[in-house]
Amino acid sequence: MAKAAVNGKRLIVTPDRCTSCRTCELACSFRHGAPNRPAVPRLRTFDFGGPPKNVILTCFQCDDAACVRVCPVTALVRSGETGAIVVLERRCIGCGSCAVACPFGQIEMDPVKLLARKCDLCGGDPACAAFCPTKALEYR
Amino acid sequence: MIAMDIDGRRVVTEEGRTLLDAAREAGIDIPTLCHHEALEPFGGCRLCVVEAAPADSRGPAELVISCLAPARDGLVVRTASERVKEARRTVLDLLLARCPTSDVIRRLAAEHGVPRTSFPESTDGSKCILCMLCERVCAKIGAHAIGGAGKSRGKRIAAPFDLAAEDCIGCLACARICPTGHIGYEETDDERKIWGRTFRMVKCEVTGRPLMTEEQRSFEAKRAGLPEDWFTKCPESKRRETAETIAKAFEEVR
Ligand code: SF4
Ligand code: FES
Image 1: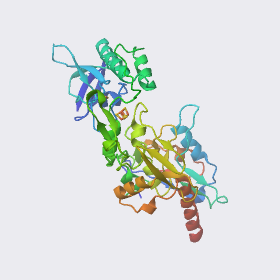
Image 2: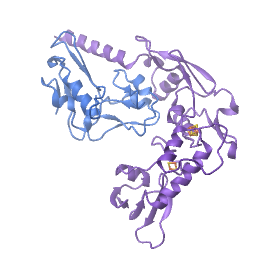
Image 3: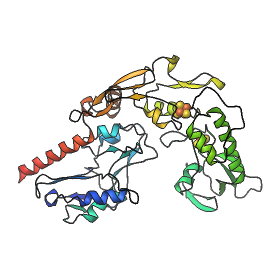
């Protein structure tokens, strides 16, 4: 799991509370999209029959992350502020190795930009947690 | 800390940054062709030219290559003066003569006020501007499969001895980074052809989607210190699998 961030906060997931309403996915889509063009969400919920069975999946911001290890150009770096592993888009060469290396499927290649795309904790103000109505996602 | 004046704005940056870095950090756009942040600055295309003068000098400002020129305290930089624009037009005029068939260069030249070249046009049909991004990214990855061949006007990008590129891993980094789309390749779900080689694709064990070439897998597994069978599934399959594992684990503790 991720090292303590400078801001001292973590994204805390309590799957038992998830109703799979997918508000978090929507919030993520809008936060990372352009006006009138929501993006593909970077976290997902899985409806396994309602609470407390549902699961929310987002990047674990792993300590010794496979994506970071595999990137040939060091385009994946940990933010000191939030502890999140972020994609430096101007450095990414779109080789796709990280997407295949992440064991949890938390990186995808943007089919238009041909760059890696993952959760960046919204730079310290994750939209998913802000909008989750049941506090299944919290940032504190 | 370094403070400069770029286009009349005060821009603060750190030691070791270039003028291009500083301008971009401040949201000032300078056109580039041979620059990529994954690679060392190269200074090949000269499109990123700007005017710079030390604040205390009364001499004329110099034209400098912003992707190479280090930021220095007190510099006064102009990224779009008449002199800069004229220099850029000359660069594009020359590039257009070299690659008259490149849409990218044609559009860029037109945007900068060069609708056609004033030099004799090259007729070889090549879209290569010799920015060397492909060679440099290939070397950065560590494959060293392609490079410059020939000299002077005959210079081009090729695999050694123009044979099939022995060290190529088929990652497509060269084709993707090429600003003009000069490097061609062919691809199906099963195989990929580039630089005279044909690569078999590794496919997701669950969905059958192509993931990467077998050679890229071996290469990247080695770099990451991970076993080859780490690279076997597409992100969607891995998400599903992880979610199911978590659901099961929770089920057990309840
Ligand atoms: S093939 Fe493309 S990337 Fe390579 S030197 Fe030519 S223009 Fe640059
Ligand atoms: S971008 Fe600076 S010389 Fe090409």
